[in-house]
Length: 233
Image (cartoon, rainbow, N blue to C red; front, top):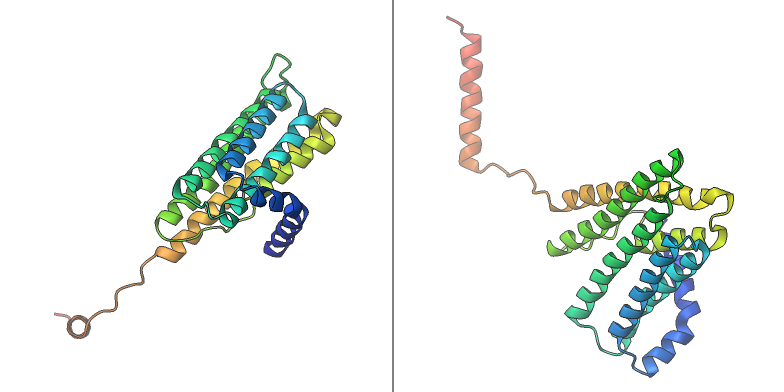
């Protein structure tokens, strides 16, 4: 999975390299790119709300491209700042919530059916799992651990939602997008649990090694108990 993800990232970086070079040469402010990507994903949420699913998918993918290049532009122009990193992470979380809320509205109108009611819970679980993935990584970083493990990280979520919406829209009663949401509801929460276990394994303290005196006391106590058991009254 890591190799597949790395290959996809390399191909994406290669495809956007010309645009990235232009942005770097013109020294575009990376916070401007972050804001632009955020506005695109907000527009995607509104498009989902208006049942314009294919347009929403295109906007999700376009916003993901902005999210891909803003950090690169910051590094190549020497504009990496603590606020920029904070600003990028914060807007990423807000934009993801907006997209999920837009998808939620697809299944929360006057045409509700039994299957759509179930999808409301699936969307909420997918949103909760996505936020927990980000939260566990942030808390791990606070402990000095770079936690990027798991299947369903942000690029995977963007690609799945974006392409499912763009290519299939609401055709077939939106079955492809529904399948993607259910998949996200399961795998995002599994990824969050995976990260919790992974961090626990990296921070747990080894059992203390008993000192020489404590070890002698322990052995003496064992010998005393063995003698008492072999000589009952």
